[in-house]
Length: 381
Image 1: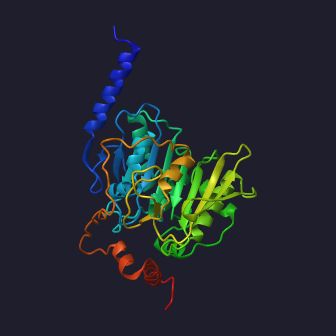
Image 2: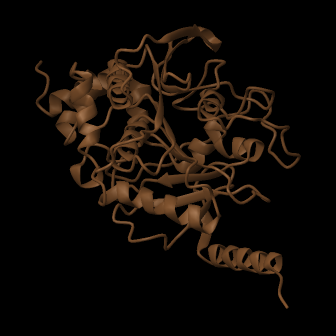
């Protein structure tokens, strides 16, 4: 007679076999830890699903979703931010959706396209389907799903938090934009140059209109460099307004402190003391993820384009904000990145397209935005 324990183990084994049969290949860059999963749903946004599940991860573990920025791949973003390393250390599963050039020539998530930013449609639905697949297949805790992203990935993080707020316990926007700031390329470029100064209620109403959800809302941290000339730093304050309004904290006095690398931290907490909204401003930081690369305590990842070594690991801080940062020792099989190691090579850009990072390198991000605004008719001269 089969015991309940044996039956549970059998079911788990069968699920692992089914999952393995639907996974093929690895990410196109990074250290090859991410595995592609196919057949996860209708995938109307035509995104790639890449994931990493640490060996021996127990049932009921959390899930972290990380969204790369423009010109980046999921594998390269993982290698830079150290997400899969932290998955091993802290004990969570990792989902890293990836954009295709057929959807966006610069590999940006289409956070400004109405067809991709509505509940039940486009890229937003594709990402929700990926989350559902991992929660079911890997036996993850549906109450501990978190999402973060950089730049276009940060803006898409705002989309997911707005359109599927019941799915996520928390989020983190890095150099991103608030939900509803743009409905098309022209508005997107204008918001990136400088967003409108709207009331918190108007920002909050945009999220409330995105679903039938009425709360509770995800906890949100906003990160931005004050020297960012690609996505204007005022977007951080507009995002904070949005989530303060949703949490009913607009009139609450914040807590102020200083963190690593001299960055300022502003936190808004409920009556029970739990912080619901946090704003991290990093002095002198341009457009990218603040990092402290390395293997020692408080460090992870590897510097590269838009992955900026400033002695501050936002990856650690974000996990701590979500209640997931309980770092253990590095595993023996982790790759050791020697000091002064070369940056990972960039992906080649297909003929007929212009790589955004090349423009930034050659002319500076401010020049890129100016040219784009002029081309869209949003700036004269």
